[in-house]
Image (tube, rainbow, N blue to C red):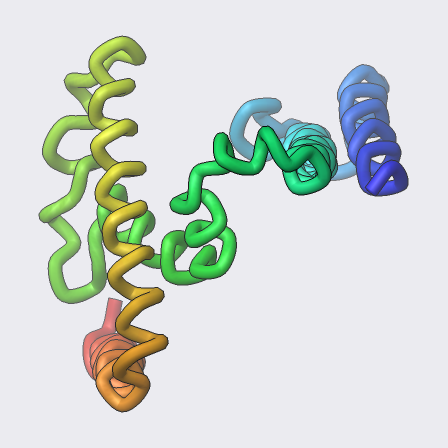
Length: 165
């Protein structure tokens, strides 16, 4: 994991360094939206954070008196990360069948960072409950999960293929 942290540092340094160059490979870009340098910086931060959390998790696992401070919902988030990712996208941006019922449409323009913190906490809490429920459903009722996944993908495919954008 040290190599992952080093790779993250290299990505951050390379992204920052490339943003300082007078030559722009893709023409004029907005650093915060379309710049490849910003993508490299974000990737580097992600890699570094992954290695940091791996280190902390291993430290907790090796220290028996600290294991009790390890929240179980974080482990469930890790096991069900794809489910958490998909559901959080639905909560924040909506879904094909209901694009207007989401946080972005309802409150994003009115939220400051201070008022967004409780909303983010509520989203994380809801995702913790949903990921735990999904994990139990997968373990105890696999046919139901297969049916739900089939419905989701068939509905999405139908909507994309039959409705021109």
